[in-house]
Image 1 (cartoon, rainbow over the protein chains, first blue to last red):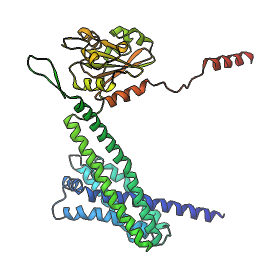
Image 2: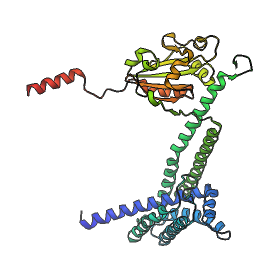
Image 3: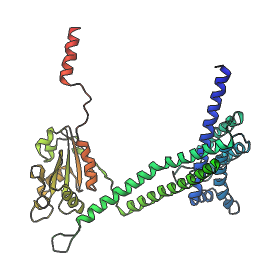
Length: 203
Length: 194
């Protein structure tokens, strides 16, 4: 295999990885913000975003994230999803700057109500990463057709769902454990202390 | 047709992702409520203070625990509902590596709890006048005290039978990772030959 062929293939692999990672992050963030929009709205309020703009951002940002993530997968050759990616990245960094300027720390709500990270340096530091991903895709995007992109998007969404399962199982196990421990005490009966008498166990 | 199937998978997958996320949040909310109501089945570590590292017999526990590799001493009180439920769940048979210390409190008969739940008398100690508890400097029951290599290693609350069995997992024999004496002798003999 020629050196040119090998480097071309590795560039293609890097571009494919960049598309999958960027789309996964944007889809996850967008869908989580859609689900728990209250947390995102609270972040906007804490940043001092006023009423006419806030409802637009509350709906617009999650929709933009989901649409950009989906379109990066389905139509990687199109230029506008990459443009949207840059716009979103600059917007995230701008939110980070605003977060640093306000006196009280602002909870990020980047991925909905999951996590309690503070808005600030993290968003600023991820800006170069987003820009690098956009630059990689600008230079060499995966050449799959929209039908294959749709298949990849379906696989990615299913994978994201599977990644959620361990947290659900952990929560279920903890709730079940507490319920069993509680039932154990109830089955045994509750001690009743009466003045001047010995303890009585109520069945 | 294939495109329609993929679109359907994307939509159903996104919906499932939203629902699973909602379920995670629901469990988190439930946990907060349980925590607020004190219904979390989670052991709390208890500081042993100055008695940490002492031999069990020094605080009044059975002497044979001084040579135990791994054991759990469970402190139960006559006046605690959880203690009674744990004692009842044991059904008279104490698992290997478990010793029970009963604090009779103000009960008329100190051995009442152990007799009611038919606890193995060979492995049950009645802590008359709370001597052992006082030496340990502890008030809380049910309490699990871990003995490791003949020393008091650590302690934690035991909020349920489930947590007792989790603590008892510790007393199970661990896989041996060292050199067996016969192997050691063989290695030494080989070295001497060299």
